[in-house]
Each structure stands twice: as C-alpha cells, then as structure tokens.
Image: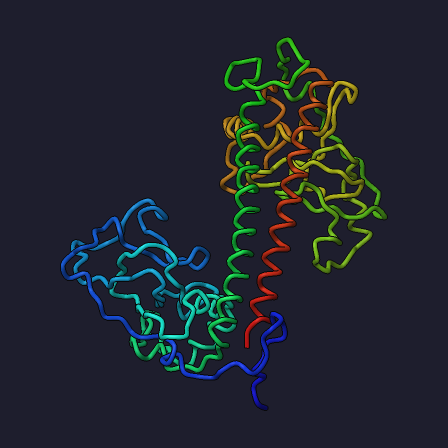
Length: 404
C-alpha cells in the first residue's frame, strides 16, 4: 500500500503532494569545532525533549562541560541538533532546532545546517511527534552493549522524510510557534497558582508558637485557639452498610468512588459489611506516609476497615473544608512526624498518634472563609490544568494530522 503524500489537515492555499526525499537532502552535516575556544563553558548548550536547545547553565544551574571545550561542536542559530541520549518516550534520541543564540555542544551531539528550501523550525516540528521520530530513527540506530547509540553523523540522515514546499513549511511552523506560546502562557499561570497555594498554606496558618497567621483575611480579629486533636475529633466505626459505594483513598483528591478510578474490582458484599461508613465532611486516616495521609470525603460511602474514619465532636464549631487544608500544610505534616514512630517500617498512622497533637484554629466563621479561599484557588488550578491538557492534546492531534 502506497503512503499517503498529503496531510489530513492543511492550510488553505496549498495543494499537491509533499516531496519524498532522504533527510541528507534536507540537512548538511557540520564539523565546525570550538578549536580556538571562542565559546566558553557558560555557552554550552543541551537538548531537552520539552524545551528544545537550551543553555546548559541557565537550564540546569551548572555546566557539565569537561576540562576543555575545544573539541565541542559549534551550533549556530537555526542549526539542527541530534542528541543520541535515549529518553523514555524517545529511546533513539531527539532532534531539535537551535532557536536561540550560537553556542557549543558535547562531541556526543550531531549538528546539521539546513539545505536551501528547508525552514529550520519545520525540522523540529516534523520530529516533535514521538511516533514519527522513533519510526524514522529505529531502522538507523544500533544500540551497543551499554545502551549507547551506534550511528554516524551521516548515518542519521539516511532515512526517508516527506516535506512540503518552503512556504508551507514556514506556515506550519508559525502555527506551532503560536500554539507553543499559548501552552507556555497557561503553564506559567498554572505554576504561579501552585506557588501561591504553597505560600498561602504557610502564611495563612500560624507557625511555631504563634497564635496568629502572617496573612489573615479581612474582617477577622483575635487570637486563634489551641486544643489537642482529641478534643476536636473522634474516631467513628459505623459498619454494616454493604450497599453503599466503596470509596478509595487518593493522596491528591481525597476519598473518591472506587468505580470511578477506572479499575474493575469484584465486589464481595459479605466482606464489605465490615467496611466503615464515611459521610460527607468526614476524614479518613489511610496511608503509611505523612503526605496526604488524611483524606477528606465529599461522598457518602464505605471504606476499608483498616482505615480510621474520624469526625468532629462538635460539628457546629468546625468547618470541614478548613481542616482539609490544614492537613495539607507542611507544618501539620512535620508535626505529625514528631508523634508517629515506625511508619517507615509499614505501620499506619493511628488516631492515637494524631490525637495528642495540639491543633490551632480560629472560630468557625473564619475557618469557613479560609476553606472557601483555598477551594476557589483549587477551582482555578483545575481550570488551568484542564486548559493545559486540552492544548497539549490539541498539539498532539495537529502533530499527527498536519504531517505526512
């Protein structure tokens, strides 16, 4: 069956089949070396699967260059670099275009300039599809005993590629550049929101011996209270509810319905009669680790009898969403470590361990306001995570359908 030589998705104004050729008709091997050491260790470049050709010092915080960089290859702007370092999704290495300033790379890298009629960024876009990259390199690369790549500078160009005319190459690459900027913008906003949440989980809760947080929501005054956890929470064990949905503990999402996890699990109603009932607003101590070991439940269901279900002694004095975020704070996790022993040997966190901890909290109105603040922040995080996921899926679809 002959290969289809037009993409499924194409910009208007272009027609006709793409041209089949060997890559050695599109790229020219470069053997330029840094013999005169015009480039220093500060100008060593690396190739990243996600970020392309980057300055090693700026990207990794240090230079991994050898004693001398004289043998290093010189990479000019718009040169194409092939690194033979295997990655999980790219076991035969990656191919990227240098979109930044001139620099140098290790002798393990292959460097190429583009032939006339080749738009440099298109080469990277063409090989940004893992399937297309791996399919191209797999027949050309031989792996050594130490998983090293056996392929020459010219040998990496011996495979077939399908390119359109220069004008269409450029339009495709410009489109992917716009998409990359949008992905970066969303990722940057998401990173800032995560950083804000991390900061607020410290500053909106009293630290050390303090009874006031560094940052407080408007309209609230007075010191926070301090009580042992056993005066706030109680352990509950309401069993014999086998018809309720089984809940599983998630470190990130709290208690979730087991049927929604995506795993098919056989139900044994007689066994599940021993499971503990969990109500919305209750907590489950579930993990053999400190991080995320206290899961909040938004559902009614049942969970493993090995877990501890706990509720408030006086519900009217406490807001469950506030305590959900307390249990996420580094301060709480660090303090829990001081009263729990043997957890690294497989012993679960117990309610007895937890109940001796002194817990700080404001009145229920302020608790509710703090809980709402973090709920709103989490909602924003989810929206940006969803947007980022859609953009990445869109990019993957275009990489598949806009090329031959």
